Amino acid sequence: MANKLLSEMGLPKSIANIFAARNLITAKDVLSLTEFELMELLDVDLAVVASAVAHISEITCPPYQTALSLLEQRVQNERMAGHLPTCLKGLDNALCGGIPFGVVTELVGPAGIGKTQFCLKLSLLASLPSSYGGLDGSVIYIDTESKFSSRRMIEIGYNSFPEAFHAEGMAQEMAGRILVLRPTSLSEFTDSLQKIKVSLFQHGVKLLIIDSMAALLAGEGVQGPQRQHSLGWHISFIKSVAEFSRIPVVVTNQVRSQSRDETSHYSFQELSRVDRPEATTNLDSHLVAALGIHWAHAVSIRLVFESRSGQRFIKLAKSPLSPPLAFPFNITSSGISLLNDDGVEMPGPEIHTIHCQGHSSIINVGSEMMH
Ligand SMILES: Nc1ncnc2c1ncn2[C@@H]1O[C@H](COP(=O)(O)OP(=O)(O)OP(=O)(O)O)[C@@H](O)[C@H]1O
Image 1 (tube, rainbow, N blue to C red):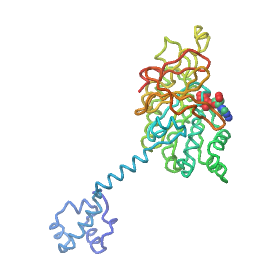
Image 2 (image 1 turned 90 degrees about the vertical axis):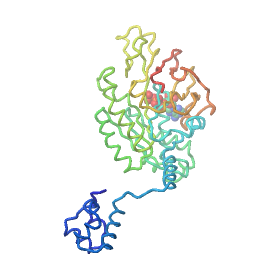
Image 3 (image 1 turned 90 degrees about the horizontal axis):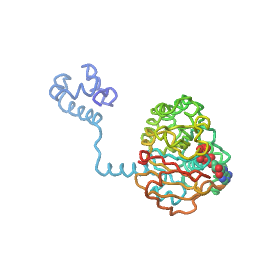
């Protein structure tokens, strides 16, 4: 502020020229002198000096704020730090409105359980015009496994929001707002992330989805804890993008089988039957979230997707506010829908375990993954 140039302050030309002639260039040069010193140096009378100093001070000092304007700003920030409703009533109630802005939400579960279906619906909701209850924004969808299907997304759109989708050109307009990136390696993913901070503002992005993180490392040939270590920068960056841009960031994560004696080892791939002969009968008996402890702590909300005796559930496994509830769901042409909105309260460690379809055995993502 003090280094602001006098020449850019809109002072009357006569006094601006005198300042320049006496080599007074910045606000600091003038405000460091007393009015008397300025009168002497500039050879002008007190009224001219006082008026110039008042003008320079006003421009240089940050404007004051009233208590009322601070209060209004706070209300505005809270509104902006809101939620993206999932349109699944029970889940939205439990999450106090939906997927929160400004934090990372993780969807974790076995392959084929419905994480991508959930992400497609969220993408639609973020891009839907506000008159239909959406956020009227763009979406950046980082699709690391080439699972994103625009055809499926449009199908969900037509069935979930028929009014909006039958409006002429709406389907095309919404599909045009969803920017799909398909990095094929960790370094391409790193590049995409670095470009995102700029794109967020250029494109009015209201939702960032990464589906999935773990898949990127699977092909890198890095082993065990090293894999998690090489993701350290990405994890911090993704968290900072959420905080800085105040948008919801949703990341999917698979669970994989793992033997009981290796609970500290987070693997991205199933151990082969040749490597672990005992796993042949117990292949999916012990699964862990693939990205490890550092990741677990970066996540504010975790939704566990699981299947028990053929019934799928979404479990609210981690949330600063919400009760530990499990919601049975199915997937139809209109995407994910809950079978009841009340959910089943699940106190204790059961909320953190992930049951696998067709398997009676369970996995436990561990107490360190809980909060
Ligand atoms: N048009 C549809 N109608 C009904 N169900 C569908 C439809 N399309 C997909 N599904 C369901 O969605 C499931 C796939 O879900 P999804 O692709 O979201 O899995 P995922 O959890 O993302 O798996 P991965 O970790 O492998 O990416 C299918 O098994 C099927 O049950």
